[in-house]
Image (cartoon, rainbow, N blue to C red; front, top):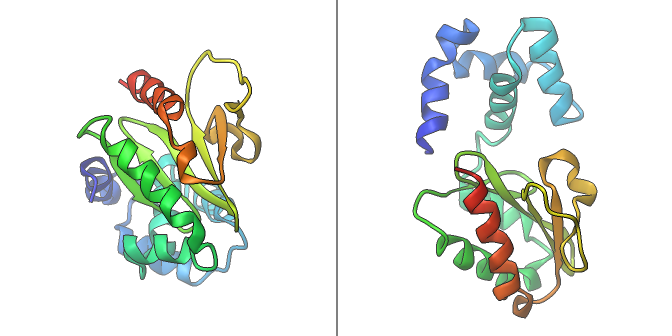
Length: 180
């Protein structure tokens, strides 16, 4: 587990008044249609800060899934995208040893001190790679964030592993370098 995440979990009782397990029990009694509904509930009804609320909701959803299960579920029916995903991970691992790869239910976050990229199998034939690059205009292949909204500043659509190339590595490197 990521050291920052473990610190957050350890500080949760002091900062929120309850342990992660206690929060999970509370959320289990409620049914939320979206992640943000769960976050809003914790913020509005229990006064939990956004960071803790987001972490609690995320961890309560992923409780019964290992990282491997989460990724496997993302690519069920989209197996042709796995070589693209693996090529991206290989490229990301070459950026530095201080990155954390965090699978979630529908995407995989690449985090340094903050999220620098987000890998999402968008369709059966395309992966969307979201990037956080400050002060860079979208241009050609490096498009606007699209459905990623404020989570990312840019999006690159990938349909084959050969598109994981030096141009993409330069953008990943830029996102990595800006995250210090």
